[in-house]
Image 1 (cartoon, one colour):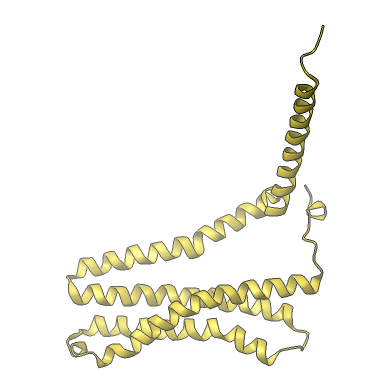
Image 2: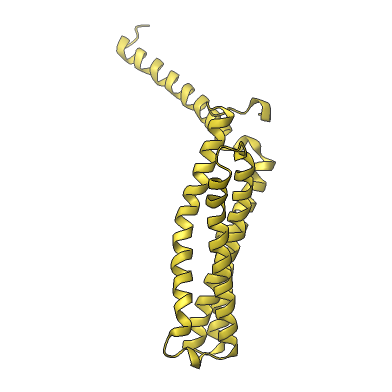
Length: 197
């Protein structure tokens, strides 16, 4: 099915922009809570009784985790602040594009902060190989589920537009309609009773 034939939502451009902004901000609302908890934890780490025992690598991990959490917080909060400043300025499409970019940068910052802070804790408790294993596992996991998997899905959707939500739904509707018509015909046959030859 060509893009021009793709079924569209029954919404105006203004309604579409409103929906997209609400969806973005809702996703940010969930993510920013986790970032803020992690950031708050990291802000208290230097005041912990045993922080002076953290070695040079551990301190670098701490700085990376703290900076990345700060970056993620800034980027997740930026669209909300910009929305307040740009309120009723007719810039919602621009704001949505910016919010999407901020969200991606924030997710990278969050992935780095989670990886670095978890590695710091493991590095403080065990030997070097466990810390490197932590970097590998957490780094690969966040990379896969947050970035690689959605990028691969997007590429597949671009190569096969017939598999996109609206188009798949149209194909399913057609299949469901055919099945419903067949079921209706079967019911009519059944209601009519046995056929006489």
